[in-house]
Image (cartoon, rainbow, N blue to C red; front, side, top):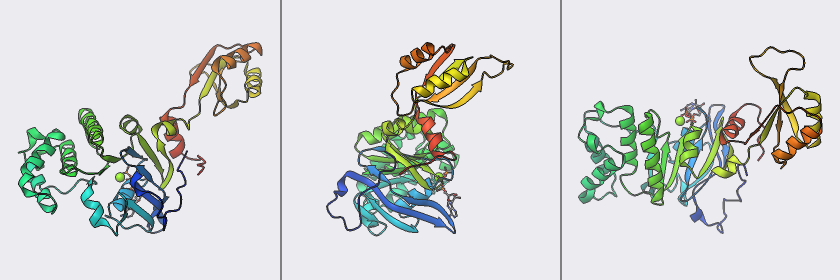
Length: 339
Ligand SMILES: Nc1ncnc2c1ncn2[C@@H]1O[C@H](COP(=O)(O)OP(=O)(O)OP(=O)(O)O)[C@@H](O)[C@H]1O
Ligand SMILES: [Mg+2]
């Protein structure tokens, strides 16, 4: 899997533009000498809930700003909903709802009045149905009760929801939400997550950034992982998860023979740890951690081989790879990313 090398794009007329909501080639943004976004090839399938995952400063917001034409790219190409950005923004922007760094709301106006104002600015929004649109949008984000309240008196979470309400004022083919749960309490976070799910249920593609892995895992069908400006992996959540290694941990006082047996099964022993918090005496139990990786050795066969090899097995744990391990591995130091 990993960041799949896409086929040629420029001049390629055979490729159907219909299957990807967002596609970039070599997209790069430099600030001085620093590449905040470095040659990324994004491929966001239509209809997906696509998580754009990465630690602080990894380039998520910068990418989203380029996708929306709010910032210019240093190099590379962008296609959104089949059209080139930013040259064809007239075609693209009416079909895209966005929440990036919260729109500027007037604090002295109510939530409803602010949305009314923003909807008026949308030339393609029919005025006859404006009130209904605003009311429905506020209802969907759970702000109906605060529609008449001054935005200056809104909490951060309420402002965040008002930003989402603005993004969904009209039906959109694509929503780009930059960290939509930032600043929300657990209840607000749950509500926004279920809102995102319901939005995608209508067939809208949702591109949502987050530095929270659990969030992406809960709501997304696909994800891309950013690390210091580079796109280090993308695919379905299952594809990303299956990149992980299964590990076994063996607790034994017979370390040398355990190494031999595990080695004979093709498992690489990469860590030995003494039981924490206990005094180390010779012959003390020790943990051996072995990576199974792609080698498909069954746990019972490993135990049988250890026992047959005279290893006293006092503990045996199988750790399935988790998406979290992957995220740490992909964004951590020293990880050699192929592809
Ligand atoms: N206008 C700018 N001028 C100079 N450097 C910038 C500018 N905007 C962003 N950067 C730098 O680009 C890098 C990526 O920033 P970006 O805001 O895209 O990250 P992010 O993934 O959205 O982070 P966060 O999770 O904190 O929102 C950072 O090192 C940041 O300091
Ligand atoms: Mg950001």
